[in-house]
Length: 250
Ligand code: BV8
Image (cartoon, rainbow, N blue to C red; front, top):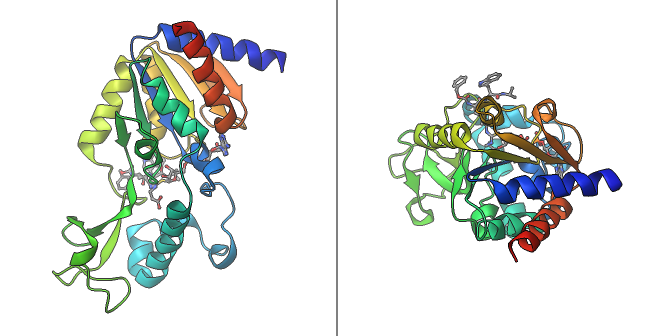
């Protein structure tokens, strides 16, 4: 416990002194909200499916109804749950620090918790787009006479997320890389650090001489880059960081 206390103090000091902070979050920050992470084994009906297969254009075209139902199942979990203390502490940090959140998550919990500057690299699971035209669709525009529902153009509706094998929104990605290159502290919370290009963001920060801090309940593919590794649950560690930062600002 002693080591963690010391590491927390160093991390809070670095964050408090930082001119520009980039926070990269992954599924782990929403785990304590009850949102299964990608690493968690799929359960029930979905046990035999590989998420990376379902979350892809080919997966969708091979079995549109199966993939649509998988997203409806996940949307229901997001609807029934809510941001946790880690999301709220991160939102509160923006009252004291120049901090931008870059998230891989599609649950929109950062915005819901009050974070202002949020770059959503992989879109939003609660939104729908036309599979053919890519345009955002609101619910009244969808023809639900079959599943997946269809856009007025006749093409399938699809969830408003970035699938494996699809490019990320270029402007959002460019902004994220630019923030990483210009930050002096990069805080990485709850990601395995495997999915690209998101996992390169801390690398860009490191190459720009930033101080790197990781919050995870186990080591990740990015831990080797870190100056400080805070081992534990995001819902416990991030509020502790916030309290230390607040005490330095009082
Ligand atoms: C692209 C939306 C160009 C969908 C998602 C370079 C090298 C190798 C491969 C590639 C590469 N470039 C591109 C690829 C292919 C691919 C990729 O990265 N594959 C991986 C598997 C190797 N990338 C892409 O396809 C990307 N597109 O690059 O475009 C292109 C174009 C054409 C052809 C090729 C390339 C698009 C990637 C986006 C995919 N969409 N989400 C949906 O949600 O349905 S990704 C999805 O998985 C999530 O959004 C998230 O990003 C990712 C899961 O990662 P994590 O967030 O890290 O979550 P994970 O479950 O893995 O880990 C949880 C972590 O939390 C763990 O570390 C755990 O210890 C920790 N944790 C758990 N509980 C807690 C906790 N920590 C703290 N507290 C807790 N309580």
